[in-house]
Image (cartoon, rainbow, N blue to C red):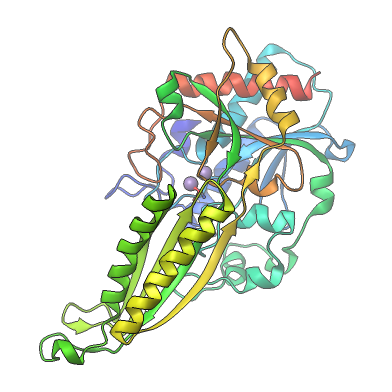
Amino acid sequence: MWRSLRPIGRSDASGGYRRYAWTGADADCRLWFRMQAEARRLNYEVDRNGNQWAWLGDPERGDAVVTGSHLDSVPDGGAFDGPLGVVSSFAALDELRRRGVTFTKPLAITNFGDEEGARFGLACVGSRLTAGKLTKEQAYGLTDGDGISLPRAMEAAGYDPEAIGPDPERLARIGAFVELHVEQGRALDLSGDRVGIASAIWPHGRWRFDFRGEANHAGTTRLVDRRDPMLSYAETVLAARREAELAGAVATFGKVAVEPNGVNAIPSLVRGWLDSRAADQATLDVVVEAIERAARERAERDGIDLAVVRESFTPVVEFEHALRDELGKLLGGERPVPVLGTGAGHDAGVLSGSIPTAMLFVRNPTGVSHSPAEHAEEDDCVAGVTALADVLEGLACS
Ligand code: HGY
Ligand code: MN
Ligand code: MN
């Protein structure tokens, strides 16, 4: 299964993945999902928001146990972030069939669309729409770097954007959603465990900083006559690191767009995207406000107009304790399974306000993620499948 998914959307140049929402690579991933579902004689469907579902049993019975993750990636992302959860879900079902269990509840495997927000800038679009945390109007306002809107992209991929919107009936039929994900950190590597359980997700967001200056000749314009937005941007990037360090938070400018982007032209516009996260909302607010203040002070000095737009935000998630502890009981062996927080967002986090959700993490020996170097060892991945099978058996076969 893993080998058949691996080549899809992989860049030969970087070895990373470019599986962006509603592109050809995304379509190929979706076809892969459908084939896996049909090969297992599961009832395949796509919901109004383009999320894929593979059902065992009749969803109308309700109280379904659902597992899955996402197949899309960040630019040049790794092979495991998302796909490990989807592949492990199918493998866990295969394991449960080998065990000969009897399901007493409906079971579904899902692929939530556009979790990374790499193309349209908003994280977890598929699950946010389903949970009613993103309205149809807001979704229609999303555009990619080429100015293609989300609805146009969905249409081009053969999906009807008119249908998108909240799906409370679907969520009402789910009793629990468990997402297995490669750990994006080294807590399990440091503790020597193969598998962990999530406790919480840090609040996190994405802010776009637009620094507008004045285009001019790089060779003939005196320094005193310049209104160079690149200086304000550079100062802001350094301020972001300073403020994050002071507050014990994280802040990253990982994406920048320059107009006209010519070597010998002072830019007219520099757009920088800030990703910032902290253990609690108050700290995150302090950090982002301090970064914006530093940006405004420098922009003032440089004669630059600054606009800051919050493009994505996810409040703190505390996973439901009952389900979290149920997983601990189902997996507890001679030593308890570690319970750990994370700074990474997930569909399970977005859905946690609507239905009981939980997460399983699989050891990542280097902690590296959102990089072609992301890796998990096969025996740890197999341990993840076994743990997921144990959890699904405990929840859906009791
Ligand atoms: O950015 C995140 O935390 C997740 O990978 N979408
Ligand atoms: Mn990710
Ligand atoms: Mn992910």
